[in-house]
Length: 264
Image (cartoon, rainbow, N blue to C red; front, side, top):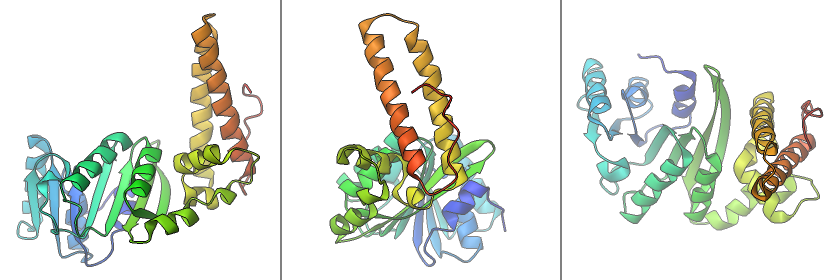
């Protein structure tokens, strides 16, 4: 049986056993091959936009003797699927904006019909994905954060629910952040940082946002070198964002981050 990277293993562990799975942007089809080899799922679709990765997926599938169980298809996003063909969809390794566009296109074309589960790993823009899920009747059931090869990733596990609107009120409960901050700003940070990750903050979450503070400080310093009114406004906005990140981190029930020496 093939061995997955830590990132792909985290995704695989969240796929419900027995599901028919579509892995979109499957690259070498490592995830569907593993899921079938491990006995977790009976069949899969591996979708790829480009011919090179698509051929690599076909070779991987053939080498594993799974050509009859994994359908490798070339196409754009969920266009490789038929409505009702799969129960779960995994998408990993792309920006949150692109991921949301793929899901929205699939929603509009009926390709999400019958799908009950999404396991998503956006490289950036996780908040865009979380907002799409809420808007389209999905409930975030679980989140994970991990580090691999010097990069920090988040994995989002969502399920479709008829009562999603009610359940999402609980998921994005503003009392998670006990701060004197306007409600819309609290909600914004729940989307950006992750409602479950904020409930049980770990050192890796703190590290991710400390690194974000460092990046913002570098940008703020560059902007401060200009005297234009636009630069002054941008610098003020960056300062405000940094201050809000510090407020959120400082209220979390974990070891407090050491960012006092940064601009405020």
